[in-house]
Length: 131
Image (cartoon, rainbow, N blue to C red; front, side, top):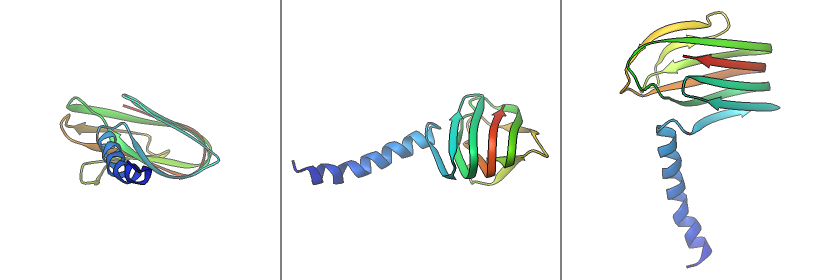
C-alpha cells in the first residue's frame, strides 16, 4: 500500500481519537503565546506555571458526583492577570473566578458535561484551581 494512501486514511482516525480524548477530559485545547507555559489538569485541581503568557486553555471538567462544589483560585502572579470560567455543555458561563473573586460555590450534576476555561493576560507566575 502506498505511503500517501496510509497518510490519507490515518487523518480521520487521528481526528476521531483526539475528539474522543477531548470528550473524556484527557485532551486540552489552547491558544497560547508564552515564553514558558506548563499546564497540568487533574482530578481535583488544575495547575499552571507560566511566563509572559497570553491566551486561553479549555478542557472538560470531570465531576463524577453530583453535589455542591467549592472552587478556589490561587494566583501567585508577579505580572498580568488570570481568570477561570466554568462553562456548561452549551458553553454558557456558570462561574467566573479571578484575583478579585477567588472563590465560588456551585451545584453540579455528575452526569452533565462542564468545561474549565482559563484566560491569561501577560501573566507570569503560578496558578492553581482547586475544587
